[in-house]
Length: 266
Ligand SMILES: Cc1cc2nc3c(=O)[nH]c(=O)nc-3n(C[C@H](O)[C@H](O)[C@H](O)COP(=O)(O)O)c2cc1C
Image (cartoon, rainbow, N blue to C red; front, side):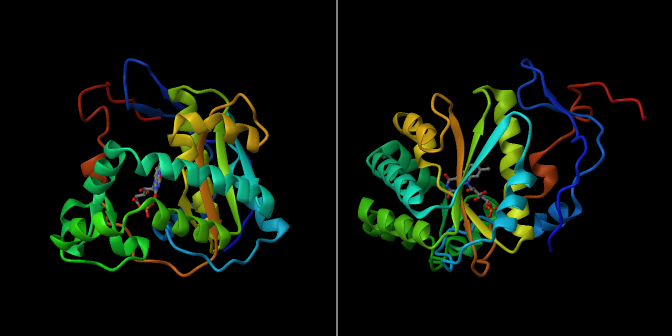
């Protein structure tokens, strides 16, 4: 499933500062069908990949599909640069696991059993990360014993060593409008990767730990900018999918919620 992205305007989105989390969608020519069809197949695949590399044409396709005005994508595929990036990710891992608030929040989002994952419809289901499903009472007990800086560092190092590359998305500016543009670039990247039969997963530690952002920006050749997303990509079989909530439970139309007047039909 491979197709060059179609050129043309993308639907416009504007965010009004007073309307937090409210988006007005404009009209556009429609997106690329291959990306649309990839939506149900996309998943965060937090496991080792097969270590294979990508052709130049696949890398070009990933790059052009992700291009969104207001966001830059840097694809890191040379091993020495990937290893420098790995070191920043591991430094972020050490900082985060040393932070009790981070660990408490992570634990809060873990779902160890299929029952709880399906009931809540959210969170990180252990089987979706390649780990065994467990009785819910046993999960936190085991987590406290196996979740260490070294175990996580070894896991991330292996995941990076078996990836074909790492994508870094950097907004042109650090404000909500550009964070939405970055989110759009990030989803387009993940969908184009999926359309190419690739898997992705986030490695955002050097973005989430503020002291590492400047080093990350320099590493990807954009010193002084604020990187927003780090995502590795490569090939492997799919893992079980994360639970999904229905669209109606996470999104309402502003008109139906009485926030905005309904738009006249065009
Ligand atoms: C903006 C953003 C940042 C994310 N950061 C991380 C991350 O740092 N680590 C991680 O493992 N997953 C991260 N995720 C992935 C979510 O945990 C994941 O999308 C969610 O569990 C649903 O799974 P799915 O991607 O397979 O649909 C991030 C997702 C988004 C949208």
